[in-house]
Length: 250
Image 1 (cartoon, rainbow, N blue to C red):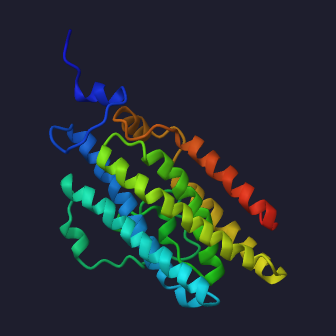
Image 2: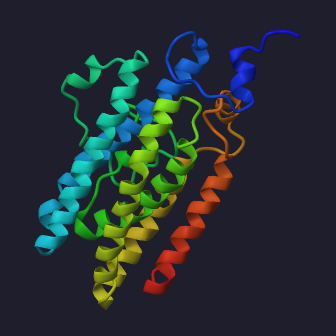
Image 3: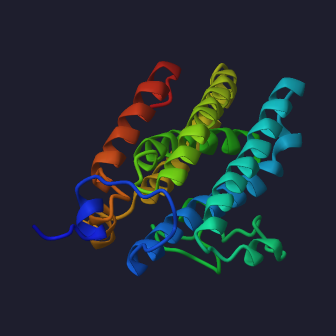
């Protein structure tokens, strides 16, 4: 009987609990996954912070501030794991323009842009409170779906962090839905929400990546992914439709 390699162990559902003796490709893919999450949370928080004072009423402003604060906290939790795994922590101590955005009509698809690892959707600028609420709902739903996947990653400390983060991200969606229901209560608000949904839907869709991704195959072999991009995209799309339809926004 031959000894099982780490790659075989991971492919069969094994879990790692420390950074020692992991394959170099596994380390690279794991750090990429963590950096994308951290950078997206930081960029998302920076963009959303600018809309806090646009929110109507103190309760909506508190909700916007809470979402912003917790996204920063989520980035910090995953950064701790990155540090233990040899991530470049000094890079996050240097000043970086997380609020930087491209032109509103740019077409990035799923491509990375600039010098950080945020998802492409976080390169687009927000235009006021309604726009921010719509993005919070649509991307929040996508994040919940993606966290359901990431809670199963084969690096146990990261899976634990994502399990702690997931309920709060789900609560962000609930807060966003509360705001969206208020907006959709008037003809003017509903029209603005529909325009924002039309803008953000394809950009959030792109965050799930390409069909038949070769990177997915590599990550699945290491136990970092378990569900194909198209399946995650389909789950998100159906959940979004189910929530928007009762508001007349689907």
